Image 1: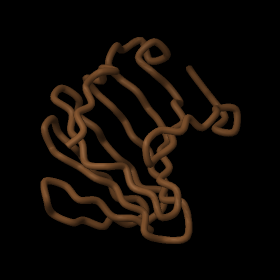
Image 2 (image 1 turned 180 degrees about the vertical axis):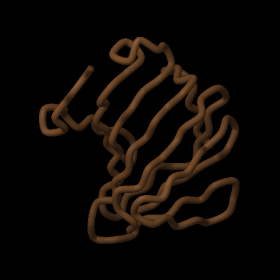
Image 3 (image 1 turned 90 degrees about the horizontal axis):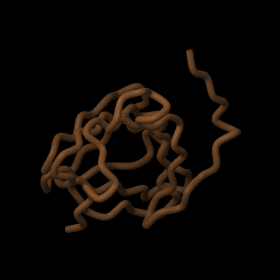
Length: 117
């Protein structure tokens, strides 16, 4: 069994978003996997990008942002889940006055598998 308290993890600021890594491949005894909480701050954007190898599953904790996936716009509700497959280009936008927050489960994760459009 493994347990963590979100408050014990630090936010890591990136380009247009922040993340808290809850568990990585070492924690899960499964290389290439990761569970993290992601926050798109108010009026911020995670710019268009894709991955060649990894699949990402997102679980939405808030519903105040939107996504552009392969040039189509999508909005999701709290409790919805989304799968982004390799080569799916995706952008995440928060055009609200509150943080946009979701969980990200990554499979086939590699640190250098990030390609900005």
